[in-house]
Length: 300
Image (tube, rainbow, N blue to C red):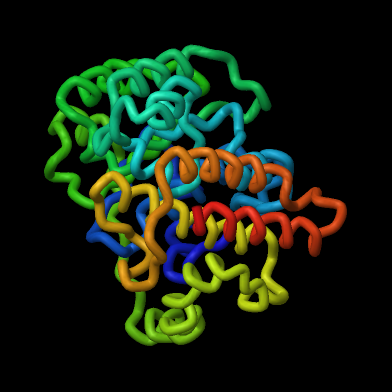
């Protein structure tokens, strides 16, 4: 699990603390979601390394491919699509059929599912975790629905809420959680991270390169990293079709967005591809399949 250098000591700190519910908060860009997911993975890890997530056990792999039975992720549908988490069958069907747009709030039905999840027995024996992000996107009804479970949690369930605006949460929600304020990275470390990442010009040309079927830009990339980029391209096209600005690429970097009825199935396929990517017998052929499918979709 990739974690920014400034988050690693914070994960180690959090992992040693007691408490069934944590609220991780701070200004946007500090890594609330990444730290919350890493903490959830640490709690569920089957072979922790010095108390931290190992990144290699079956539990860690299940989280990586978004299929862990003991992790319930509560997010607005837009965030779910953005971060590669599958929607339930009915919600996906509604979006596929254009019955509604992806939600920008955490829905009451999803909260009801989370409360039912909390009552179930752990599948893998490491307990269960409910992750809420961004927590301030709970409305009054969903927040109140969560409150009772926070007050009287079933024995095996833990909560990690991540927020960019904790002041927007109900005071009763805040009072039921232990608070953890994210620390800013040292300036030198942030600069090194920026220089160590992909060149901005290279990143900007990726969507059009994918649309043209130019696979050389992904030479020597791990398959999961390629899928991550394709999911980001798919996400920005999806939200653009819904009238929302993309998160990962500037509009000028994108080709004209294909219809939703083409993008939605592609999004589901990428989730399935992610689940089997590391077990593909021939990684080269699998990459060809991914890029061929992307080119067809983006030119539809």
